[in-house]
Every structure is written in structure tokens, then in C-alpha cells.
Image 1 (cartoon, rainbow, N blue to C red):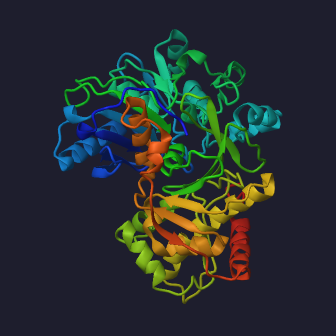
Image 2 (cartoon, rainbow, N blue to C red; image 1 turned 180 degrees about the vertical axis):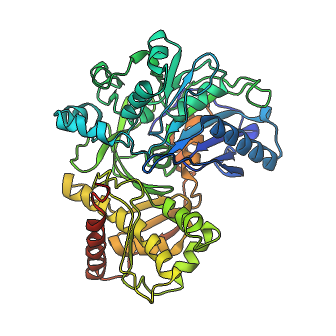
Length: 507
């Protein structure tokens, strides 16, 4: 447990604003000194798909969504911005954006973590024999998922970007860096180790940007943000950009690490899965550096005692498949309808849906896989399809947990869950049955934003230690497995037959 020496705040006036800039929208929470959610705000922003496999976001639209969500949260709490004690920021991690340092205007739309446009560049790196060295330095596989090749693409394809970078007028970052830069009026160009470790440019042993990797990808090191520990000073908001007030930003963390932190996951062995746009299984590894052939090693955080690590299985599409049911097929009108619809049938009727819309992540790592639905008959209904989408979340999670066990001997004894889909009892019970381990759902499932708020609170002295924060995490419901193992094994084997049909489809 880490103890912070920061002077404590007066608790009766504590208001922590947690900003969670996700893939499809921005959530803002106001937390009190007990870590309770006082109010919420949420706004979606547009998704842009200029070509198959390409996904982009407008950086200024994200800013507007941040301000709108914050305005909602403040209004709902009945407070003004100058009542805030501190701000924490968490974000979709690997999304890459570059902007002009003076004007704070993006040079083009951000390239989203789901984007596959650099698949060929990654293939060139692999064929040239760089995979092992990149994994050694970064803990990552060579995949378009990570930010480094996206930045190289921007520098090479965006007119004038490389010249601006060499002249010192271009800044690069993930969405945390972009938002802090914008909120501080350009005064801060910063990030944290969790986000830096997802760029494929950061040496996770030394905790520094790697000159070797920057040279390999053709990235001038001057465009990169400075790296600061997760709980501490990241800057102060510019009153002209944040409701007329200056508020310290004292916590920043990538969304999945923030979720692990919000799940009180700061002890080695604690695991969580976040069911968001994608799903991300993380297990805390402490200060030891785990290795895996199928998963990635990532920095969890730095609380001032050195880097701590996690083993991660990144699943690219889970909640996005629910959005597809809603927006693409119009099978449902609103996302919450999917759970009751899925439960309206006893099974999928042997229908399996592999949501590889932008390829498959762990443990397959196939950027050319594509979404597949198999087993459809004349008797298949929208309810069967909805159930297949929900069950796919659980199948993909089991794939990752089995890779953890088979690849490095790490066996998860229980799984803490969060994210939007975790409110579905059906999903949580199916997950427990399929994996034969308990699934724990906390009282607050918005643990990503809450984790950012916890870090900001530590950085500002609202809370003095992780031990104090541990008292704030509580289980709302425990789901225990009820099946015989053979039933889950048969279903998982059938799922993998469907996965086989999606592999390398885009070729």
C-alpha cells in the first residue's frame, strides 16, 4: 500500500471531477470525499470510418464532449467549477493525435486504437525481424493497435507534419496528452507511464522514451510529451478554456489501468475485465515484469515508488457489437435492451458471432480477421443474434484467461468486472459459468472514471494512501459458477470453430 505525503484536504469541501474520455463518448463524474459518485454527465461524439478498417475521431469534437459532460455533471451536483478540488483524466489509450503547439489545432483527425491502416507497416517491421526487440523493450506485439505506427503514418502522410515536427511546432500525444494540453491552454505537454507504454515507443524497463524505437519508426523525439507519475501535478486549467477557473489536474491514467486502480487492484494477482467498446483483462504483476507470447506486458502505474506492471489481454470488439446491433442492424433501439432480449431465448440456437470488425486482438492478433456470424437457420431470430453477441464477450474473455494460464502459468482465481455491459446479470453469470470462477461486480461499475478520480485525489491529498482507498471498494454482487466444466468446454470449442472462419478474411 502506498502512502502519500501530500498535505490532506479539508474533506467537507472535497469535489473530485473525473473525466473519462472513451472511444464513443465522454463521461464525467463528481466524487465526494467518500469516493461516492455525486453526479454524472455523458456525451457521445461522432465516429468516422473513411475507409474499411479505418477509424477516426475529431479531436475538437472530443474537447466539446468533455466540456459538455463536465457541464452536465457540475449542474447535476449543484456546484460550480470553482468548487472543484482537483481533476483526474482517463482516456482511450492508443488513439494517436498530433496538433500545432501554438494554435492547439489538430493537424488531422485522430487515428483511433481500432484503426488498421498501418497493418502493412507492422508486417514490414515483423518481416525485417524487429518483433523480438520491440517486445523486449515495450512488452508489446507489433500490431496496428498501438500508437507508434499511427504517429509515423501522420508524419509521412499529413502534408507538412514532418517538417513541423522537425521545426518543433508539432506535438504528439494520446488523448490524455491532447486533453491536458487543451485544458491548460498549451502550457502542459505531458502523459503518464500507462499511456506511454501503449505507444510502442516507450522502454518499460527504464521508464523512458526509447531513442532506438523512435529511430526505427522515424519519429522525432521532440514531438513526444514528458512522462509524469500517475498521481501528481499535470498542470492547471486555463480559465479561458475551463469555465473561467483554474483547477489542478493531479491524476492521469490510461482507461484500462484506471479501471484496475478503481477496482482496488493495486496488489499483485488482482484481475479485472472491463466490458466497454472492447474488453480488457488486466492482472496486476507488481514490480516484476511478466512475459507472455500471446498477451502484452504493460505499465500499470507509477505512484512514486517505481513502475508497476500488468499482464493484459486486449479484446478489440465487445460493446461495439452491441452498438452494431443498435445502429447497423437496428435490432435494438437502445443498448440496455440487449440483455433482456438475449435472455428471452434459452440459447443461441448454435449461432456464434465473432465481432472482429477491425481484426482480432489477444490472443489471436490478426488485423485481417473480420466479423463473422455462423450457424444461422430459418429459425434464427433477433433474440438469438443478440444472445450470440453477449456470449461472444464471455468467450473472448475466456480465450484471454486461458492464454494467461497456458502462456505464463498465471491462473486467475476470481474476476472483478466493470464497464457498461457489466450491469447485465446474464453476462456476469454466463462468464462465471463459462470460466468456472467467481465474478465480482462492485457497487460502482464506472471504475474507469472512478480510478482516475482516485489517482487525482491521491495527487491532491484528498486521500493519503491506497489503504484508505481500499475501504471505498465494495462488492455489489458475486456470481458463482453453476455448470459442469464439460458444458463450458463444449461451448468454447464451438466458439473457436467460428473464430477459425474469421481469421485472415480480409486477405
